Every structure is written in C-alpha cells, then in structure tokens.
Image (tube, rainbow, N blue to C red; front, side, top):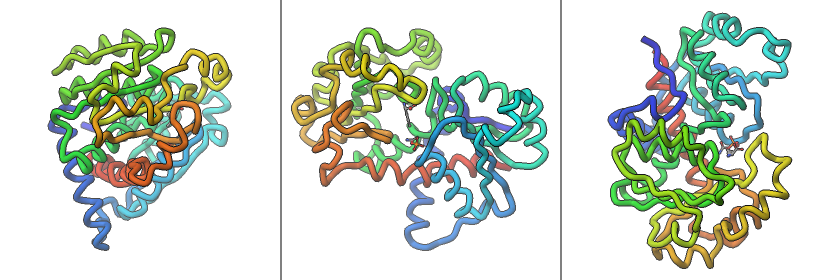
Length: 303
Ligand code: CP
Ligand code: NVA
C-alpha cells in the first residue's frame, strides 16, 4: 500500500530512526562523490501554493541527484486555480508521476490529495505542519549533539506550523521539549490533543521565553508572522515583545546552545542579527540537510 507523509504522527519512532540513518549516509556518500541513482526514471511533482526557496530547491535537487526528475507546478498555472476539484487533479496526476510534494494553506487539501491519489503525497508545508523541516532539523541536532536523547529543546515564538511539527516529533520520539509562546499565539489545543495520543513524554508549555531557554541545549525560533499571516505583522511585533532570540535571552541557555531557525529569518524581529551571523551558526547546515533528508524521504516512499 502506498504511504504518505502528511504529519509526523504518520511515522513511528523506527521510521524516524531509519530516515536519520539513511539521510546521514546519503550526505556522506554525496560528499565522497558516490552516486545514488535509486530513483532513475521516477518523477516527482511539486504543487506549491505558497512561496519557497529551500524546500522547493532541496526537493528538486534531491530528485535529480537520485536520478529522477522533478516537475514544479505553481497552483496558479494549473487547473486547480480554475476550481478543478482536488480529487480529479489527484487522480490524473497519479497517472503521470510517482510522487507528489505539496505546499498549501489548508492542510485538508493535502489530505484530500492523499486520499484521492494512488501515489505517495508529501506535505512540503501547510498552515498546520512542516514535517520534512523537523526531520532535517533533528538530523542537524544528531550531527551536532550526537543524538536527541536528553537534549532539551526550547521553542521560542509563534505557535505555528513548525511548532506543531516539533510537538508531533516530541510525542513520537519522547523529546524533552518546552514551547514558549505569547498567550494570544499559543499552539492550537487540538494539535496538542492529537499529539498526546502518541505521547511518550510530557511537553511543557509556557508564556515565559526566559523560563523556556533555561538550560536549553537547542533554542529554536521562526518568523512571528507565517505565510498568510503577514497582515498581522505590526500587531504581532507588539505581542511578541520579549520573544526575540538574542544574546541576552540566550545567556540563560547552556554555553554550547545550538540556535536553530528553519529560515527565512526576519533579522531584528524573532532573531537578532548577531545571533544569525554567528560564525558557529548551524542555520546553513539546517538548510543543506533538507536536501539529504528529502532524498531519504523520497527513497522511502517511492516504489
Ligand atoms: N524552511 C523552509 O521551508 O524554507 P522555504 O520556505 O524557503 O522552503
Ligand atoms: N512558519 C513559516 C515557515 C516558513 C518555512 C511559514 O509558514 O511561513
């Protein structure tokens, strides 16, 4: 039966472990110039309704390096924008391509595509989740910290799609996660409830960023206004006062704290310029690892 990757709750701990192992192996092999053409002759479709630099290019290069072909489609250029039903588009695309990566606003649309397709569907970001991002970020944590066990991860910022996927990963893997959001921008309680069904750990929630970063091994942040929320930015800048990841906030974390951001970053808002430009910053490793992790994901889903 075909498998989809719509949310990290679709995966078991063992699936995460296999993806980490394979992505790290593929990265090493690529660095040594060893080709891995396991998807020769296969085609990945990408339907994106929101902007993307990293996820799109990482998926396209991953597919090309694995010997396959990507086809990028902005929704505006397809009949979806003229209201062709998702279920019809999904059935038609299933006759052409071997896998579909989608970036949409409403998560229900990705679910509908997955239901109506006979090919695997990958969530490349929705308003609700960004699963592939957290997989590659955990790979980065493993590379820099030697693993994720006993690693205290502090989320500081909006209760958004990236935070939701961290909560899902924490539930399945038993991560030590604390989530700090302003009161009016907390994680949707339904997301927490559905993650708790799988929970192997207690996830902490607070509205105090100082409290959250205390003794943290990893501090993670993301934009205060995600794609679709841009109109609220000026209000949010006020609501998120005190949530900027800067040297002063980080002084409460462990000395070797890893600061992470999925990017794109808004300097001077959720993250200070000097933190982003730190010579030991891992943001660029995070971005690179998306390509290696996407390869492992594609390999695991495409028959
Ligand atoms: N981190 C991430 O998903 O970046 P893009 O929006 O550029 O794909
Ligand atoms: N939360 C951000 C992530 C971008 C990669 C957004 O959805 O815009």
